[in-house]
Image (cartoon, rainbow, N blue to C red; front, side):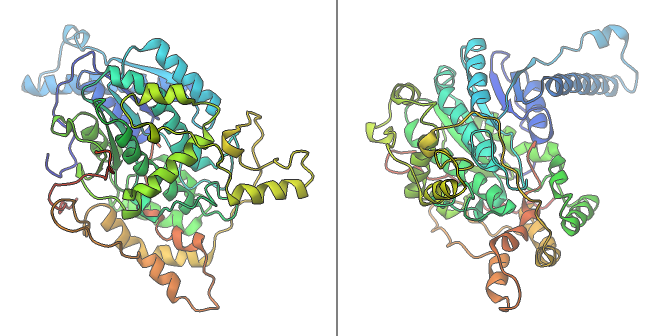
Length: 482
C-alpha cells in the first residue's frame, strides 16, 4: 500500500455503489470523482440541488478533458477527432439532497436512498463544518456535533441493511482529522452550553467519529461491513472562509497556503479513497488511517468505556428516530447487551440548561436548551450568538506554533507509533497545553485560546472482536515527506 498520497489504481465494477456526503466540493468532490473514474456508480449528497448538479457537470467535463488529453499523448501529440470525443463514456454520478443540520432532512435522505437503492457498498461520511461560531441546529444540537457526527451516525444506522446487502466487503468511512486528538468526551458539556471554543467543538466532533468506527465495528461482527476513520492531513479547501474573523490566524493560513505547505484536495482525498476501495484492506475493520496507511488514533478514542458512553449518549439523542427493531435490523449478530437503548440520558449540562430556561421564563423550561434524550424539536429557530472576538493570546500562540504543527500534520516529523507487537506510547501533551500551564497569572488562559493554537492542524473538509475493538494499525511508521 505504501505511504505515498496516491489514489489506488483499481478498476471497479459498474454495479459498485458508493455514497459520498459533501461530494460537491473539496475532499468529497475529489473522493467522488476518483471513485467514479474507476468505474463505480457514485451518489453525492449535499444541501443544494443546484450545487450538486454543478458539481456533477464539472466532474464530467474534467473527466472528459483528462481522457482526451491522455489519448492525445498516446497519439504522439495529435489531437483527438470529434468521433473520439464522442466515445468518452460519462461518469455514473447522481445526487440526493441532504441537510445534515436537520435530523428531519437526514431522515428524508435516508428514505429516498432506500427507495432508489437495493444495496450500498461504501458509505463515505465526508461532509462537515469547522470552526463556526457558536450556534445550534433546529434540533437544538451544537452545529459541529450534529453536522459532523450525529446526523452521519443516524445515516449509518439506517443504511446498515443496504450495506449488509452489499457485503462481504462493504465499508463505512468517516472523515476525521489530526485534530481529533485534541477533542474530549465530556458528557456534561457535549453541546457546549457550559463553555465553547470553536477548535474544541470541532476537534471533539472528529474524535466522536473515530470512536464511532470502533463501537460500530463491535456490533457489525459477522456482517461483512467494515469501518474506517481517516485523517486527510492539512488540506487547502473552502474551510478557510471560517477564519475570516480571526484576522491574524487568517493571515497565517493564507501565507502557508501560498508557501505550498498544505495539501491539495486531490492529495487530501487519497487516504479516503484508499479506505474506500483498496483491496488489501478487505476484511479489516476499526481502522484509523493517515497518509494512506493504518495508524494509531488518540488513546482516549480507543478506550472501549468511552466508546460505550458515546453510544449511549448518541442513542439518547436519536431516540425519536431509532427503536429496538431498527437496531436489531442494523446489527443482527450483535450481543443483545450492545443494543440497549438508554432510558435516561439527561446530563448535568441539560439540567443547567433546564434551570436557565425556567429562569428566563420559558413555559417548559426548555427554550434554547438541548433536547432531553432525543426529544428533538423541529422548530426552525436558531439561537443567536454574539460574534467571537479575536484574543491576542490566540494569535500569538498560532504564530509561534504554526511551522511545527503544520509539518507534523503533514507527516514531516511523525512521532506516532503503529499498533502491533510494540507497546503503545503514552499520549504526550501538545505544546499548546504546555504553554497553557506556563502562562503567568496575568496572562489570560482559556480552553479556547489553547485549542485555537492548534487550528492549523485541520484545514480540511468538503468541506474487531466482541471483547473490545481497537483501531488497527500494523504498517511501519510513516516517514513520508511531502
